Length: 441
Image (cartoon, rainbow, N blue to C red; front, top):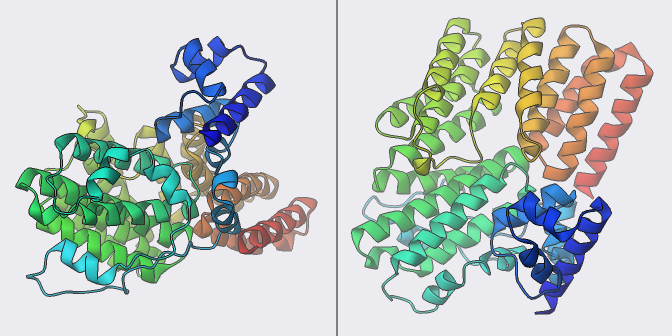
């Protein structure tokens, strides 16, 4: 296939820029020298999103460049680079339906096949078995197809840490439609529940991207409602906790910190009814942030301590259904951000230093928010130049991941600092304008 040859050429160029032999690149990504050679000649296709991520990371490229989206789907790349939400037709905001209707019935009525950007095809091409099943409506779904979908879904959720929002939203939307075409209601109970769980995970992913990255609260709420209906129907504590925790952020950031705390505590309760250990740890961290937003220091400290206690115990990560990842480095980032909300800027700095040191280089979104939080801590402590330096680091990442909430907060940071009238504050202001222009295009 011609596109495989283009991908191979890009991999080869990236390898040569590093000055590596094929065996060195193979060692970096856990494959053989022969495999690298076949990929570079276009004989083998890249067979997973996670593998494309690893190659991009070690070669210093973006995943969309390695997968040649600019060649396959030039119109889609224009959308992705512009920072605009792709042309996905969403369900109406907070769409409701009679309780007797199944989730797939709600989906067929409220989701219509919009003009999805072409990137969707590139990702779903990694799922040929599922696409083949979808072409035969009403056919029994093989367990291998279900397993494949869940594996791909996990890759998409992990991709949140580094993919731009306009690439992932249409992918998540397409996966929901793909599962709908497999007619979950006609499948045996175990298969049906697994398919619906995949739909709810994709709805949660779309919701958080639309809200925090693309600033579209209306569409985000619609996906949240849809995903939560499914989570309740299949009685999944993991997914109920995930969707309630996400709603806590959206509610609090929307100007209702008390409402955000209500959702966070509901997420904790849901997780305690049988979610994975890592999900329980995450919901306690979410609660710590919501407590700090309401100025409740005792609630913040006790919730964060509970989160770390759970993290220190045994994990059952095969059950993790969350977005991206949560570990001690993220707990440190939560602690630093929470302390800033409480006005304890000097105390926040060591936690944020630890978070930035420990977050992996591929965790672009998490590093972005950690840099911003440390900039806010430096600003609160009166360290203007250090605050501007971290503000620049956050903006560099905003351009890559389209995280509009961070862009908004950097704007607030600059307004706080610009009265200093230093070269650092002027430079940050110019960078802020450039970043806004790049996202607005």
